[in-house]
Length: 203
Image (cartoon, rainbow, N blue to C red; front, side, top):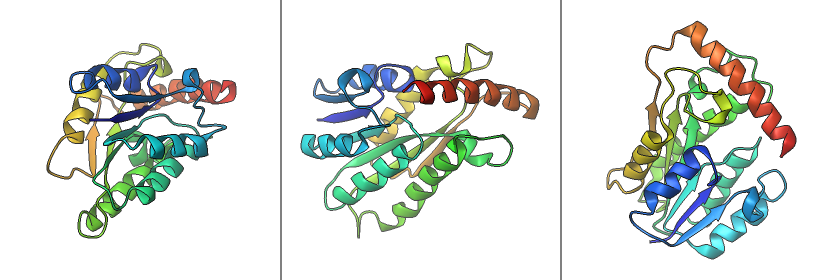
């Protein structure tokens, strides 16, 4: 079993690495710490994944325009092979227009969701590479600075792991926060957006 993970050093990616250690020790781990930067080398990341030829790909890391491009390119490259690409999406894909989304984050997460649902109709008769998207609410990462009611990254990783190994196709699923009303969601999104912009600018 060979597994590739983008953005493995923190957050959901780090939790995925820990969870997947239960089934394999054969990983391609990609982040800036290993010389894989979505800002500058998405083509190289794609080529490294293709060369590695994993069974499962967790397309977790995000940079404007790069996560959706990587999904589409890998899906096309592996369309004749029995692979599974699992994408870390976002609940914001269902909230476009609610926020001032300067980076286009929610729009791109919506593209991930829509692509996975659409491609599920060609699996496996016309395309053997399965794709899944997990639209996640606010998790306990540095992006939202320890707010209340956050979803544990380990919980998310465990659900993504289950979907990765499920025999039943799951093109889209949602993991949401409890009791988050509109005002709280907007507050969290503002915090997350500010920190995400800083992360993108420093990458």
